[in-house]
Length: 203
Image 1 (cartoon, rainbow, N blue to C red):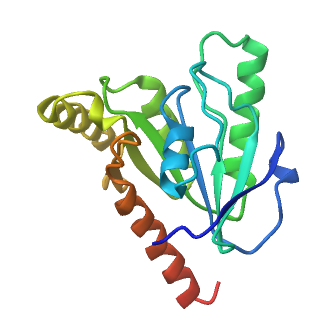
Image 2 (tube, one colour):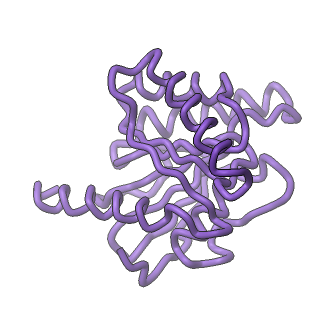
């Protein structure tokens, strides 16, 4: 897939206020500082499209971007940032849960996982909860350039093994590096394949 255009559309804090349309919508979510904005910028080839920051937890709203005028990328707030107040954490969880539960346009939820660290309970619980709700999802391992190939493969295996404890068939997964532009073509091809299927089905 070639990205010809990528434009910011709107930010808001309520799923009910998200733009109404009939186009596929691909949402990206993960723990704070997992590299979500960097991946979105890498996928679209637009360095400043999604705002990146060295400070975790900067994305506090649901951000919509229209791609090629044909489908949307949605940048969701990160979860699990411990320095937020309990009230802020509860509000962000409400924003995320409402979007996932209410958003009929949601075509696939990409859950980003930091490949450099062992499996985290918060990530596994989130995927388990989304799966139980019937949300179509895929796992995206980020920052794959941050460790050796052997260590990378071990961390991914551990995470997938942990998923298999709850899933008969694990979701599709991708290994990426925004710095090295690894895995982005595979991710875009996956999105392109879904879009083509939807068009063939007349959605």
